[in-house]
Image (cartoon, rainbow, N blue to C red):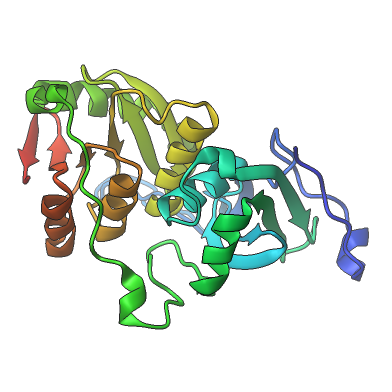
Length: 297
């Protein structure tokens, strides 16, 4: 369920922003910017002084509120926010079962102003909420960082669970990955318009893509994907994750927590990502640019 929260400030009286299908701010917008698309230097009219109308991605603060306590504020693309919240709660270990996420509501704040933001409220089971309060941290999330706001090294939790690896994972090959990554580009609808969003896709063992979620942050895109699978009761179905990013440690950590046996990305992994993947027993692929890919683990 989605509704707009009424603010007591004067911002509430402003005209509403263009909204997406779920009532949150639109994920893309047209803005006049001083941008020039330059042809080759020897071509006539190499530049023009007139600003172009360009489509850019929205990036707004999204507060994740559990049992009326704000746990994290992430900078994200305002789309698929219910899936984002559920995926975040699961991949960060706040809850262990999608059934523990109840009464989801998405609110918009400051509509029609430059300070538009969103919040996602949910009720979680008492046993999970008690653990959350015990280990609570305040996150000021950024699109490129997964540890902002952590107040101690111990909070990093760099020891993932061991992932059960089904037999079909041994059969993953370059051709299967190429099938998934070739299909991924055309399904990045928002990125085709704005050029600045990551995508996370769910592929079947034979490389067929079934779901693609987008966000300005790579870990946000993954949380949206995992959340969509969780809301649809599909976390147990066989498949693996493909992403248009480097393989960072937090992506491996999130996948391991939800039992994803394989992760493939378009760029190379970091050393810490490799370390976590080996410890979890996950299969890790990088530099997936058809017709080639590199298997690391």
